[in-house]
Length: 270
Image (tube, rainbow, N blue to C red; front, side, top):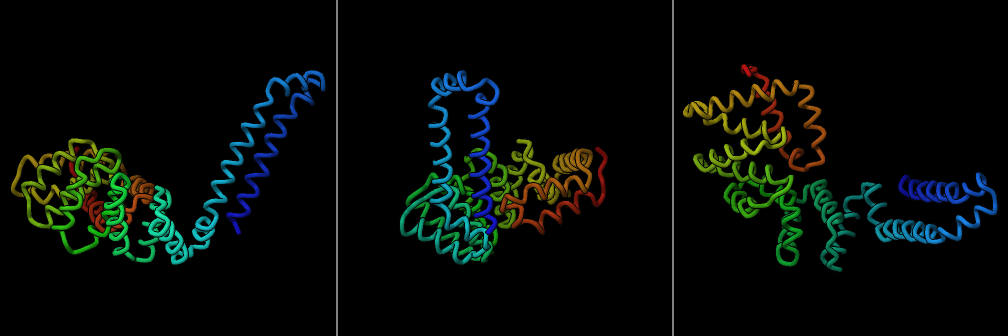
């Protein structure tokens, strides 16, 4: 079992490194100076073993879901984490994140919504932190009105997820043909200098307004030119791949590839 082996090797390496450091004065300075060094720094081994004990305690406490994750036993992992969340009411960010991923691996989007409902009742702050991941069922469902309502709630959320939330909200508006409101949000998103994938998708949606809006058409043309100048098609694909830890990028994979094809279909002048 790889995880067990890594755990054992980790402890061996840490203990061996500590012994080398702790015994180094004996080899370099002799016994007399070593006893002085040890007496003056007696607290260092205590701190070391407290830290090591804390790390080992963390692994031991989470041993079951680590091993289930290693075996890719998604059903077993889901059952274990659901017991932690729903039965024991232990809400930890890492476990909730893994539970959402496991639900997606098994295509159980309705369970993501059930989790979102539970967090809304009992852990609103955690629901806000995971707003983007918990919103995936709304992206996948054929119900743009509910999608709009959900992401509208988190428009004021800051942090690295904010551009994606704004884009999702704008996308929901466009699906409902609320074009003017969508246009304003997309223009504001573009002005906020979003990450490259969001930037590309924003230009892609804004291009729908180009035939009837000369200002938007110019903005899209200039934006495409800037992106093409900054990123070759290969480099942009590498950037997209680096972001695949973001579930949003995985879910929108087909649309992202369509947008990338559009971006390089006719390279506009910078």
